[in-house]
Length: 116
Image (cartoon, rainbow, N blue to C red; front, side, top):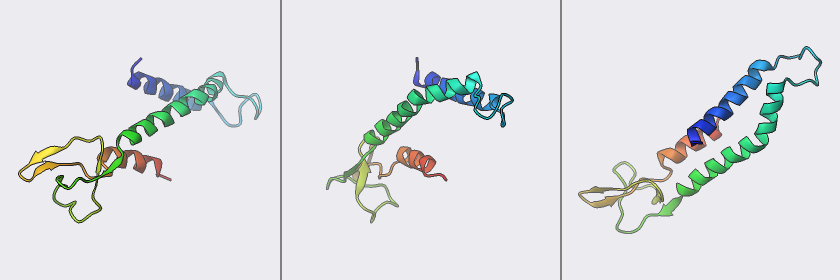
């Protein structure tokens, strides 16, 4: 099963559970519908898998010190010299240029996680 299909299944399960759940439930406040019960049971494995996936991506996209012969793109000079250990570098007239850290991948993940 592809990563996209796993995420789609997790999303569908969560959305179906929340559509099914009405408050107060007709059978009483302690009753959960079958879709909500399935969603809660699946969360025991879904959430750790999602957290593990995010941690793996963040571990790949970790900061590393800039080597003396590496350059940052214009506009990033004068900042703390750390680059993304995973993102691609490119050649310029000055030599190899590295992606400044935090890279767009890290910024996207952290921005989503830090939303209140």
